[in-house]
Image (tube, rainbow, N blue to C red):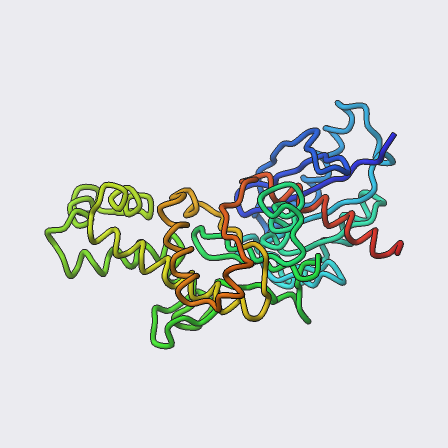
Amino acid sequence: MEKLLLGIDIGGTSVKIGIINQQGEILEKWEVPTNKLNAGITIVDEIWASIERKLSILHLSISSFLGVGVGAPGFIDMDSGIVSEAVNIGWKDFPLADQLKEKSSLPVFVANDANIAVLGENWTGAGNQAKNLVALTLGTGVGGGIIVNGSILNGINGMAGELGHLTIEKDGYPCNCGNNGCLETIASATGIVRQAMDKIASYPDSKPAEIYKKYQAITAKDIFDLAKDGDAIAISIVKRTADVLGQVIANLGVIINPSKVLIGGGVSKAGDLLVNEIRIAFRKYALPRVSDACEIKIAQLGNDAGIIGGASLVLEKLNNYNS
């Protein structure tokens, strides 16, 4: 019987776990809550207890598996499998790979959660196994991942692909990273709300202002819904967001020269309204030879990208070792 793969995607709220075959098909998937008490000290124990219960139900032994691929938030040293820092979980210099190796007796490979999601999207999702690809995840922040010559770009200490922290405006909004004007201060859901609040202050009789007065809050989804209905202020926010993203992708284009750029995360649910504007901006800023070769698409796998990417990482690493 062909050996299987375990994919694990550790998030701030839940841990997604999947049993995946070597074609990238999910055979079984489930979630456990992320227990952040005591700086997340019991997370690995709880993940492994859940896996053992599932394997017992499925009558599978750990010898049925090739290895374990894990995505975790924060800064990761891929060579050692140490999570240098994961603020939203509480880990610091946490030996994630070693702990899972000890429990599983399997090869364990760890990468940043955004990078893992990119690997998954490229294996069985919208990437379609592109050799050179950029992915942007637009959520509360902006995550990113880059594949070059078929492998995830990690850098000397795991910081490659942190696209949300490209500086866009030197005197822009403060970012959680400590800098000002990062991409995620504009193009994340949080950044879109911040843009909306600026507009509301300037245009107190506008439709966004009406929503804010009614609910004492406004969301990125509200802005996209208003834009779809033709509201000029909402459209201006969407166009500015897309313009910034198009310029970033154009700049990445002369460094990476990707065949595909994938847009994922909650903000991507705006669909063609946003992506069409990003394409327009990309063509405006990019060298024609770059834009002619590059397709901008919405990511397809959603919450499954991480576990599929974990499985993909195992195959990639083991193939490299065996070649």
